[in-house]
Image: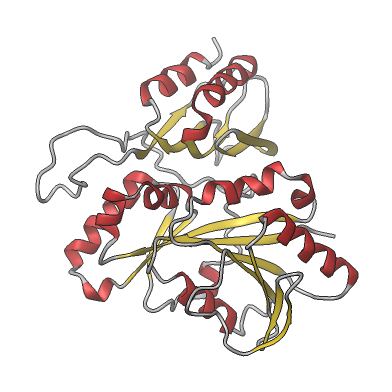
Length: 335
């Protein structure tokens, strides 16, 4: 049986997470039965017409045929209960959507799918979606580390309430989000109205998926003095990104040693990292990605004339020492 895809919806308070979730649940075109996990029920319930509730299991069936489960207990427990009920035929669903609270750091949620064997044998993350409120996002990014972390982990960024600010303000926000996380695509949404295909089946954690990064190696973490029209935050974000690329192959032993050292020293700060590696003596691409201290690799298709060998790596993290990473990667290249 194939793994159950999981979509994580995060974003700061008031960004529109529940609105987007309702949009997904009401859409009939994707034809998927969805199990929803919420950190807690807020004042706005995802569906007011609940048919069945099991207080002991904290699992509810909603009127649209979907399922909801609250995480007042442990996430692992909630997921394993859902998986077991699915295996026994008590419930049926095709996908899980997890809606985090507005102040949540999505890192521990994502790590659950790597660390817990009981979860990994049934589920895999499809993507992390982060919503941003165009009215308050810049201030939230300045004041709250959680907001910056939510951007750093994202596979897709959705900006809501753009009709309440100027086009210039939207562009400033987009520029800032791109500096923090060039890996994530950015879309504006109106009251959660976005094609469901844009939020499901992202394959953001699929090792074999296409890596889409800024290939020019530009350092997005820069230190020039800000001017009113430069598009920067007035304060440097502690979460930023940088890209490494090289047409020279890596030495496998040197690269393994490098990653071992970096994960030991900076693992908790390495929010998301992903890459395509050109390895010495190998005629196939090696793709990798990680969340904090957890990393996986896979060998995929051969290099060909349309895709000549070249390594591309993107790192998104909190106060990562760019120079140490860039020099270490350079020193890991084959002689």
